[in-house]
Length: 146
Image 1 (cartoon, rainbow, N blue to C red):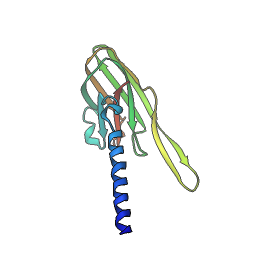
Image 2 (image 1 turned 90 degrees about the vertical axis):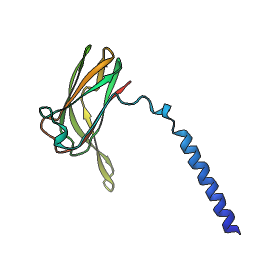
Image 3 (image 1 turned 45 degrees about the horizontal axis):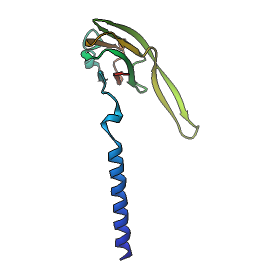
Image 4 (image 1 turned 90 degrees about the horizontal axis):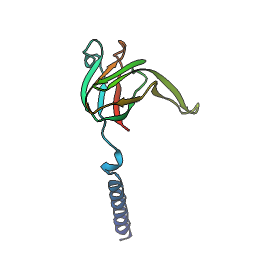
């Protein structure tokens, strides 16, 4: 009998925790979706002269470049964004940072360089990602409104 009560209490507690977790994840807390996003994982995704090019509808205002790189990502990326009142070009370099201790060592990667893109007016924006021929690794590139 005690085993059944303990199981029931554990199930109710788990249900309460799951409910609390579910209501804490609210779409409004995530912020606006990205204006541009591309996960570039192989050479076929860089069709236009060795670069990935995509035209998106962008709202006016400041935007921030964000990346999800890894150790195999291109060492250098040049990002250009051009539109009616927008002209941005930035070259970013992949950097790694050692984390942890000697017993549990790992590395994290990120791109260093300009990240702020000022979109002058709403409308079509051409985003170009050029890996300078380094198309073997993967990287995700996003442009988020601030």
